[in-house]
Length: 208
Image (tube, rainbow, N blue to C red):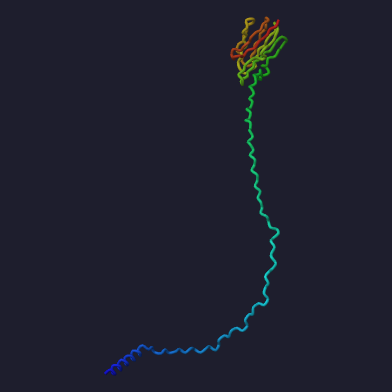
């Protein structure tokens, strides 16, 4: 009995072992080598037999080195104090000229003239710029018995009136060109005016 059991166990062991053993693998056959393989190059480049010696000559530095350019700093300009300019002098305005006894031009026939010995001419002055009116001459010297001829040789109407008691006379209002004459009869200083224009007067000094 025991013998049979052991025989069965041995059979089982063999079966199990057979199941666990792998099947033999087929060994692959390598292909034969190619007959036209390229042989290695036989002419290898030999190394250079003459080595290049290192350069022993050092390069000297450039003798013409350019020194750094020093840019000069310009000096600061010295401030010039402003010149004190004197204020311009005020223009001197000359005073207006004193009125001159310039007679206004008149026709030749209106100019008083001494027509004979002992006759003295008196004319008028019309200065419209300075509003100055007068006689020409402003002072006349004559002698007793001589004649004064007054002529309006201006452009306005005038008259000739004496304000002196020693000898009183007066003309009418004379148009331009009009005349008036009077003979001096005594020694005196006679004041003559034109009462048509203020401050228009003269003096006649009568000598013996």
